Amino acid sequence: MSAAADPVPGLSVRQRLYGVRSRLRRFRWELASGGRPLLRWFPRTWFTDPLALVDICSPWEVAWVTRHAATRLRGTGAVVELGPWLGDVTIGILRGSDRNPAAADVVVDAYDLFVFDDIEVRTAGLPLEGRFGDGDDFLALYRARLGGRGNRVRTHQGDVLDATWDRAAPIEFLFVDVAKTWEIWNHLVTTFHAALDVGSVVVEQDWAHACTPWIHLWHHRWRSHFRELEQVPNAGSFAFELTRPLPGAALEPTSIDDYPDDEIEAAFDWAASLVDPDRRPNVRAALVQLHTLHGDLDVASRICVRELAASRIDSELVDVALPELANRLAADDRPGR
Ligand SMILES: C[S@@+](CC[C@H](N)C(=O)[O-])C[C@H]1O[C@@H](n2cnc3c(N)ncnc32)[C@H](O)[C@@H]1O
View 1: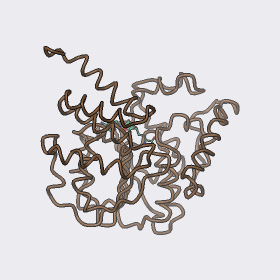
View 2: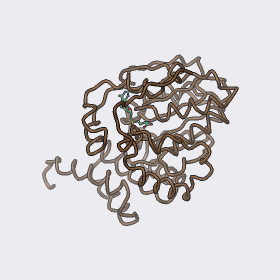
View 3: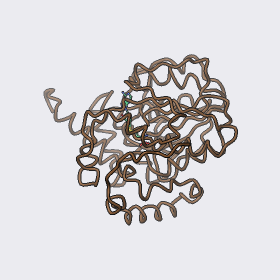
View 4: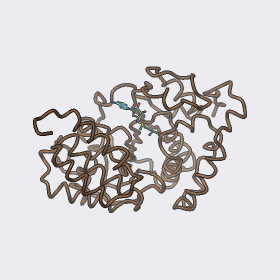
């Protein structure tokens, strides 16, 4: 492997070590709260890599995919990552596969716009401030960070809504962190989930979060086709293994009208039950978000109050779902509001 060029040259050691104490404190805390089985796979660079300050996935998700690639990949199909951002998870997959003779030749197909839209906010106050601008293409930065392992990554730059995949080419491992709208989710299911083989694993990064309720609805409806593997400790990701082929109906696009009320309630009870108690309110928040974005604001308000009565203050119910609902209610000028 050739030596990697520094993706963010010119930083002092002091700047590189920015925030190292708080990273250490977080690491020790999270190690004690479920991280220990992943310690061996934890990314060592996380303490000193300045780009780790703007990584969106947790280092435990990186550790999880590293372990998965090292111990579970069989080399029987493709590895696809949807929404890799700056490549922390991609590197984890490649590092893990380096240690797995069955997967040593694995190539990651990575789909992203590779264009920054909120990097200025993300880097404000950090040593990286001013280096990158919203609208900048970050494909070269992604590639530079991969270093010599980059020759095992095929990048697909553009809107994932335009992405295609040959269903006849099985996907053995799918990491999904781009299902940010229902339209995208419908496209992912018909394009990528459709190529999962029995025994394949899909990680839904947005599981223990509020913003992507279509993921919970779909997985609940087709849950008898998957084994629930685990929630990644200290993170929102949940991993499923396909245990029997998906029927054609599972690959059809859906909307909220395809889900009766009792199925919706059952889906979120089930989805929340899969995650740790701290993150359950985030999944409950996704139920509110579902009605706010795609249903009726009166129903969303009623469910929001019910969930607030039962939930902790510091959750995405309060930080994400409630503000979104408040915005929509404020913009709703129907008489009587
Ligand atoms: C939450 S971030 C992913 C974080 C990443 N998994 C990590 O390891 O830190 C979502 C990613 O999806 C990409 N993205 C958002 N909308 C997209 C679209 N319509 N098509 C392709 N990529 C998109 C963004 O550029 C971003 O890199």
